[in-house]
Length: 215
Image (cartoon, rainbow, N blue to C red; front, side, top):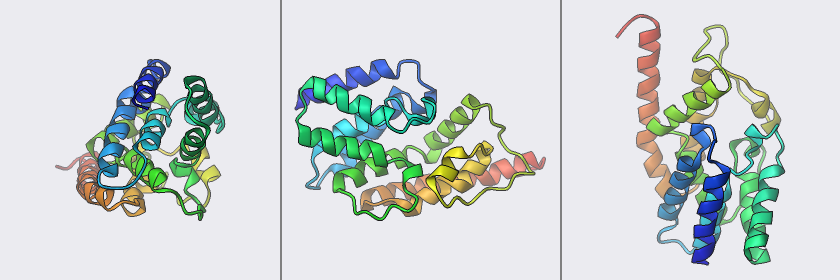
């Protein structure tokens, strides 16, 4: 099974070679490493966690015309070609297909501990100092303004609404990033999130002061 992990790293590294910096191989490796930390002391399958964390951003819908099936299908096909067993493929693909923020709207189905760990690891990488950097990287990639005084943050009622949003980057903090702390599953992730959340709050306070010509 260890060989699957090393092969996955090589595959994903090639797939994300020219990726937007906020969703590149470095992001994937941070999620992978954090997921293993969160899994420590649990009975979760580290094989499922490692593969899901490593493969979660291949053919990401955000960069593939909104195609929600491209990523899970590419990951499943790669695992099949690599010789991963059907049960593991099914579990990993299910995590990849449903772990994004846009899929959390209205989700009532109880998820596996592996799902919760990988989702928490991915969400932790969206907050804190690196989360701030990633937000502005993606906003720049989409040619979005830092802020627009005439556009207030939105409240989304569905994943479709969230996916269609083209909000300024600062709005994204209020629409998603500041909500993450209270949407984590594991105690370990919740503890890590506290400082990162406070760091974002301090950043936003300073941002507001500077754009008003203060501080």
